[in-house]
Amino acid sequence: MRNMASSASSRGIAAIVGVGPKLGLSIARKFAHEGYTVAILARDLGRLSRFADEIAREEKAQVFAIRIDCSDSRSVREAFEGVLSLGFVEVLVYNAYQPVSWKPTCFQDLTIDSFQKSLAVSSLGAFLCAQQVLPGMVERGKGTILFTGCSASLNGIAGYPELYETGCGKFALRALSQCLAREFQPQGVHVAHVIIDGVVGPPRGATMLPQRGSIGEQSSGGDGTMDPDALAQTYWHLHVQDRNAWTQEMDLRSSSARFF
Image 1 (cartoon, rainbow, N blue to C red):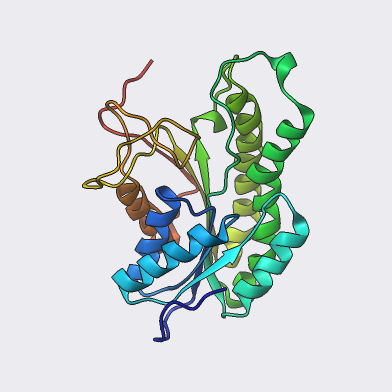
Image 2: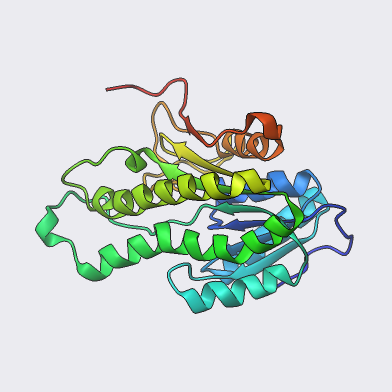
């Protein structure tokens, strides 16, 4: 865990789980810009530390990099011991995903290990992380939990292992978000599910070229690629919504996306 700035935040902790170079990084940067102490969590601690340096330098914020394996309950518990030691977690964004192959294949060729891992990261990890932060949110009567879904949260497509594996996990994540919203929103905790209906590219103005990859973080060339900074702005909007008009689910897509 690395403290990347010396100044204290006047706000709570924003914990962003599943921080890669695109959507997760943009969300973390947005909450840091708005004055939050930010904890960024993912498997690759070396890359996380570089992201923490970058955000802290740009936003003059406190940023902590903490390793987590969302498929491992012990890892989640230990990671959030570090997060909760920083203070009250006011915001949890669960953006974790399990990278999978985009090569077309049939159902019989899927492995049990791969399927179980994807389910664990997509839904079990969200369950475990929410359990860590909800007691504090309920005690204070406020807090925000945002889950990142994708088009596979709503529709299954045959022939692609990432939509068998990720889709099943994301279906479960959507159900979890609805259950938590019904139980905890009356207690002051805003729970929302964000469906990213498209492929996330690099921020506008970035020099890197988009590359096709996994749902939620990697990008694809062509029309319809989504700007992660624009998506992060929507996550922020959900957090600051008036509690008399909370959104439980929304789907986001590029205006240039093609519909079939």
